[in-house]
Length: 75
Image 1 (cartoon, rainbow, N blue to C red):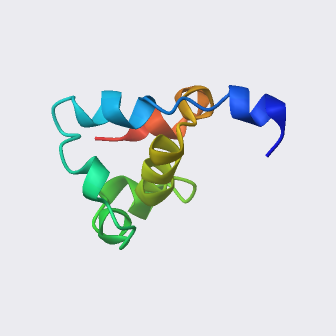
Image 2: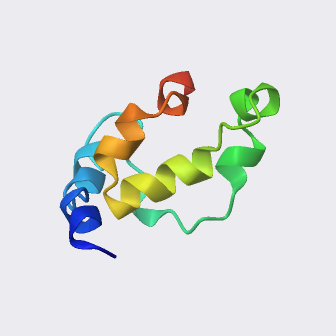
């Protein structure tokens, strides 16, 4: 990971998301993929992947995630 990539990471982002309504289970996610398999949006939008979104949150990729068009498709 480069210095630039490290600066783009926000280690507190996952805690911010987990503290919001609907984010309660985020910190216990073990990447099983059920979120993607059961997501109605992922059935009609090929690039939408809830598992990837959760992974980005856990890694602290806040800016990259919020700039993505896919995060705004989540129902």
